[in-house]
Image 1 (spheres, rainbow, N blue to C red):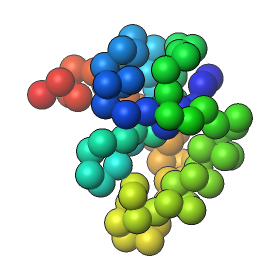
Image 2 (image 1 turned 90 degrees about the vertical axis):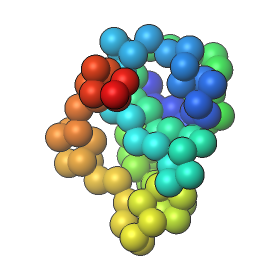
Image 3 (image 1 turned 180 degrees about the vertical axis):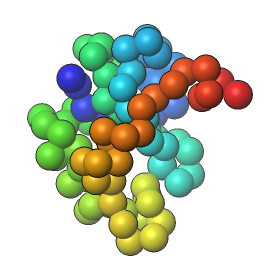
Amino acid sequence: MNYYLLNTQQWDLLDKNQVQFKHPSLDGTQLLVITAQITQKYLFKFASITKFVLHSHYTTDEWMGDGGQLDYIDIQNDIYIQEIDEI
């Protein structure tokens, strides 16, 4: 898997069939994404899922708004479904 921080334009270029997880920032301008796709267009690429989760911890005001962070269990249980996302 690949762990990315993307903006909305970069998100639009991804093959949504390969996305496993997506979490938007509170302002909707950035997304934390886990995908099988390799892309060269990203704001940041995390080396591991641990660093992906830690980013949400250190920048919680951008992602959660309640002082919390993404947890491994959230990522495992929150499966991206393209059809729901398009509503």
